[in-house]
Length: 126
Image 1 (cartoon, rainbow, N blue to C red):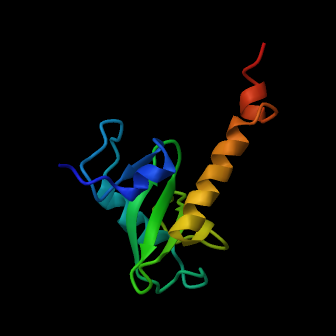
Image 2: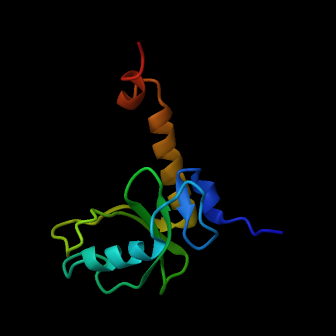
């Protein structure tokens, strides 16, 4: 029996890089960790923090990381794919906390996107 990944709780837009490759995913999973390591700069809050990329969003450049020193802590970062060390707040930290906080963040994003007055929804209306 195939083990169900907890990443599935985040929705179909996430690809678990620790499981079998999702048929909708054509991204090189090894490149995710490499790019994260390249982009995190000395002034970034996670500089020097051991992060393990465990998933990425299929619709944009978000990665979900587990903190190796604190395995109950997760973070969602948005990569720029600049292939260089970033400056300022990039890569941005979109969510940070324990698993239930990450799931709550994703549920809030989904609810906002599903709201009838959201621009992504109203732009599609006749």
